[in-house]
Every structure is written in C-alpha cells, then in structure tokens.
Length: 162
Image: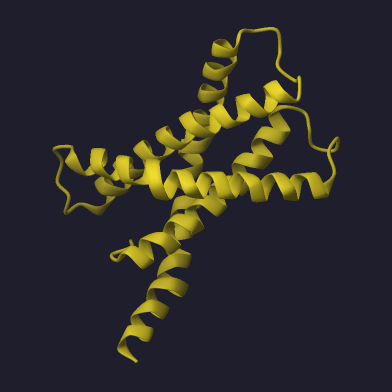
C-alpha cells in the first residue's frame, strides 16, 4: 500500500489503468461494439477514459473515498478491512462518475435505447458496479498491489536510500 504522496500517485495511476482497460472492453462487449469500431478508435477511447478516470481518482473520488472509508468504525490494523472499504467506496464513486461519462457518450452518439436518461444512467450504474467491484477485489486490486510492491515501492525506497 502507498505511504507517500508520490507512491499514492503511482498507485492511483496503476489502479486506474487496470480498471480502465477491463471496464472499457466490458462496456464495448456489453454494447455490441467489439468488431464494429477500429483498433484506433478503441485506443483513442482508452486514452481519453484513462485521463478522465485518473483526474477523477486523484482529485475527487480518491480523497473522498479515503476520507469516508477511514472514518468508519472498524479495526484499521486489519489490512483486509481497509482494502475492502477503500475498494467499495472507490468503485462506487468511480462507477457513478464514469457511468455518467458513458451515458454522455451514448447520448451524443445517438446510441441510447428508448428509456429515459435517468433509467439508462441507473442501468449503467448497476451493470458497471456488478462487474467493477469483483474485478477490483479479485483481479485488478491484487495485481496492482503486487506490481506496485515489486516495481514501484522498492524502487522509491532504493532511490531515497541512495
């Protein structure tokens, strides 16, 4: 887990990258767009979504999620509780914002189904949350924590000792 602002920045970017890649392909698949848009369009979408998600995570969702998660009355010495509460609030916040982004994208590309904007938004939130939360807990979270500890945390510690 990150302990400094620099580590927190790298950790947040790594987590965003992993979630953005999986969630982008999940949403392309659920909307039947795999095979209908070019690799260039997918790559452009990945970059745009990564920038938006990173800014949201670093400046809005991340600080609020940490404040809420760490203010809850549980034993903070148990790492698993901290990870679960942070993951829940981070995923919840990011799903709320990024589903709004997805709704806007669908609206401007005229690909919304006949439901109202509000119904589409809540449908997106539901579909994205049920995929994103397990994804965060089972795949992306553990993978990013491993890679962060192996490559970033050790490197930052070694640089500060030099």
